[in-house]
Length: 274
Ligand code: DC
Image 1 (cartoon, rainbow, N blue to C red):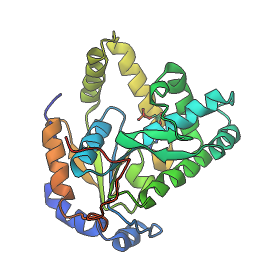
Image 2: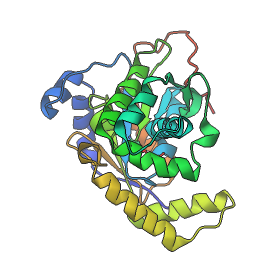
Image 3: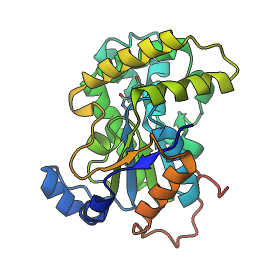
């Protein structure tokens, strides 16, 4: 993995001050004020930017819960296919979603009716369906509400949420909002490395094309397109390695504390200390 660099250092104390106050950030960004009972940190970025890796590691270090929003979209897509419904029809997907009990499980997993479908969420069929599912605004809104609800669970000490619109749409009043930046070529290298480490053959041109078409589709999703809005900290991962990037994130999180920090309740969604 290439070296990663943090840009905008001089801005982040200001950003933290503003973002740690839900009311101020709500007023500044013209959003409805929502106060979360625990700190919420969001990592937005394009596919392959490394946001999920960083979110997982950050949640592990902080012993907070990790919300992998992509996994939630995949779970709904998988359930839609299982039900024989059409992923391209918003109403059909919504009907399936309305029957699903969705909960955050450990290590960023999503439990569907108390079962973890992790093993079936990355099949080519789900890959195809999820792009259609994610295009439906009504589905996005319904799923966002489900994801927001996990913050209120009494065992949760804090949440690290990652996704293309984690900080812009899902948690606009998060305590800290980070945009994980990576150049297209770096993202391509990382994707190829993932294939190789999984022992899979990878056609570089094909992967480049599929990343480009994903980017175009993501960019067409209006407010949910990956973007760094005012108030976001830009974490440029082109010249920082993973450890350096996590270290930077931990520094940024230092001033965030959880009102539930001293609670002895077990959190089934948090990761054990490494
Ligand atoms: O990150 P991923 O590949 O697991 O995401 C799966 C799909 O879900 C992808 O097509 C984009 C979509 N998605 C989204 O639209 N918004 C999110 N916050 C997360 C994922």
